[in-house]
Structure formats: C-alpha cells, structure tokens
Image (cartoon, rainbow, N blue to C red; front, side, top):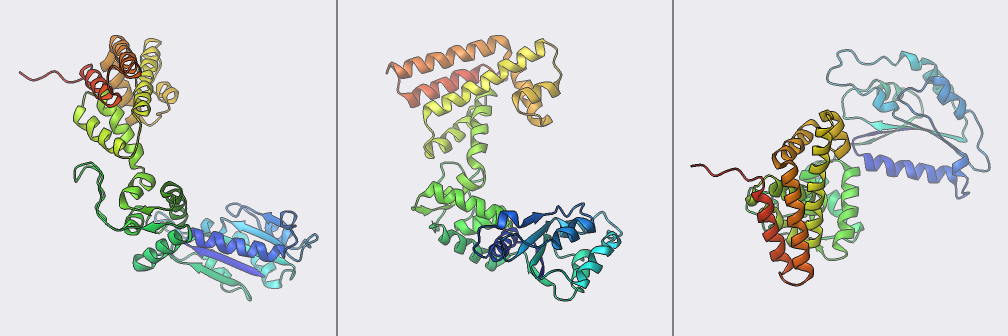
Length: 353
C-alpha cells in the first residue's frame, strides 16, 4: 500500500497519518519496532526501498514514513525551472514493480497547489492512493474552527470587545471569536489547534469572547507587557498607563507588574556594565536575550539615557514602593502608580520652552 498525503491542512495530514499508524499496528502495540521514518528532503531511492522490503516484526504491517518528500519538489517563486525528479528514477521503478503487501509506504508534505513534480509523477504509479488536504477558507474555515472548539468544550460568545483600551490601540474589531481566530491564523490548522487548546485551558468551561482570543491567541498580553515596561522606562506615561489598564483588566497583580519593572532595570544595569567593559552590540544583545538589532539597540539607548545614577534611583524608588505597600502605608495599586510616575521622570523628555 502506497499513500501520498499532501496539501495545506497540516492537522488533517497529521491525523490521517495517525490513522495509518494505528492500522499498521493492528492492536499489537508493536508499531515502534515497525515504524521507519526516512527524511525525504535528502533521501536517496535506496534509503526508501530497503526498509520497504523488510518484513514486519510481530505486527501485521510495517510502516515506512517519508516526510518532506513532497516539500522537496514544491516549486518556489524564485525557481524558473522545476527541480528534476530524475535522481528518484530508481525509486519510481521499484514502486511500479510493487512492494510487499505487509509494507505501508507513506509520503507526506505541504503543497500549496502549484505544479509539484513529485505529486505529478506519483499519480502515474498504479495503485497509489493520493489524498489531498486543501486549504480551508471562508465559511468552511469558520465551520472547522467552531467544530474544533466544540470538541474541546469551548463555547464562543459573540459581542464587541470590552478591553479597557481606546479603539485603534489594540481593541479587537471582530465580534465573533471564531472569525477573529480565522483572521489571526488563516488556514494554519496546526496553529489553530494549538491556540484552541490554550483557549480551552484559559476559559475552563466559561464562554470564550473576542477579548479572550486577543489575550491568549494573538500575543496581546505579551505586547502589553512590553508596552508597560517600555512606556515607564522611556518616560511615556500615556503608553504605560494604557498598558496598565489592559493588564489589570486581565488580572495581572501589582506585585507581578513590579517584578516586570525590576527585570527591565536589571537589564539596563547589565547593559551599562557591558558598555563600560567595551562590549560590542552583538554581545550585549546575546547577554540580554534580545539579539534582534531593533530591540537590542532600543535597549542600549534606553540604558544610556538612564545612566548609572538613573538605574540606582530606579532601584531606590522600587524598594520604597515595595516597602510602603508591605507596611500598609499606601494601597498597592496606588503605590504602583506613584512608582510609575517617579520612574518615568528619570528619562522623560524635558518640557519645551
């Protein structure tokens, strides 16, 4: 039995492959000793033919899986001439000659619908089962998302966003959570599966809204965390307080937000120490976990603007805020807001005259 699984629906391909594995196992529990994976991107005919000719051990079938073979011949926009399948001539001759009935040979990979030389050639091999998993779009995609959500116990509730941020500054435009997921992840079924799993854990049986999708599935919380710390350290209180409102709405504790600020100023201290030692930007980016030039250079500029005295003042203000909160002198929410104002003043631009 020879099968080719191809298309854009990655989750569909993965599930069909699991069905074939279960069929090969036949309930014996011996699949691990009868499953051979041959990486298709650089496989030679002999690498595939050899395992196919080997009989199974204590199992009705032997499954030989060749992932990446379809991808290997998927045409790319910059390619003017399709990749030749001539190096696989020996493989096609062997397949046309037949493989043992006890062998299940499965090729799999992503194909976007353009002419694929491997798929075209395999269609000419007698007895091959070609299974396409096409891209999901429009209403079929929405139906797929709702079905997958229902299977996880997720109930979608339609309605506009209630996130405490102004329109145009992060608030979802959609009113249907399923539509928002479709807009975020398109036809990436594997990505949709992962995000729905996270959403199911986050909502724990309650209705899921567009705000839940924005928080859990679009990385909105991570972005707001960056906006909060960057806003405070750059002296942009407007940006910082907008992010604070969002994080509070999603139950972020004042102590957790205080810890984020400590991390930010500790990073600046590290940068200043490395600059004093003559470290280059690449070494600094690696040390602080921000190797990307844009983020790295912004962090370096921020540290330079603060300077050693600014870092010391920031630490002193953080310690004072923590003390007044723990002694009950100041409400923890108010203590955080006072701290944000003090810290922002360390790097806020001087007023124009």
